[in-house]
Length: 130
Image (cartoon, rainbow, N blue to C red; front, side, top):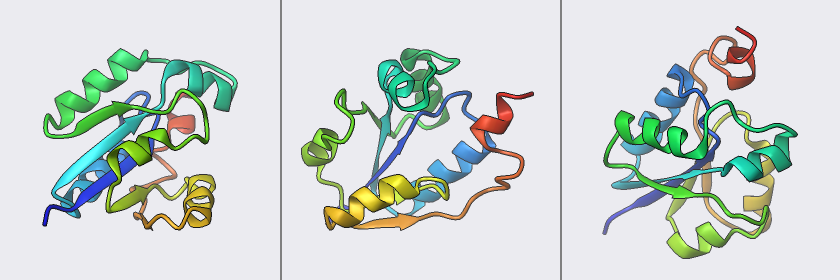
């Protein structure tokens, strides 16, 4: 039986930390769905738009790994429509995605935190300061 996995993120300025996270998630499933937050949702959650447009962020992910199934995130934060649509076997989370983990716990959805790759160096908020 094919194991499906899912990850969530903005993936702005795709960096080595993102690439490590995505590669580790992909190793643990047969098909990986990469859910990318839309520009509007990023603005709603973070108070600013991402540096790269949704289309540019998706393009970078597809260049990194053409086998990824890249999907837009929910337009309504917290609706979990994309999860219901795909029904992955497991959701892989980054070390800084505890808020998503709490939502998944409440919904009894299986998830696994993946190890960080040099978070003191490869974290989007730090990368934007350079």
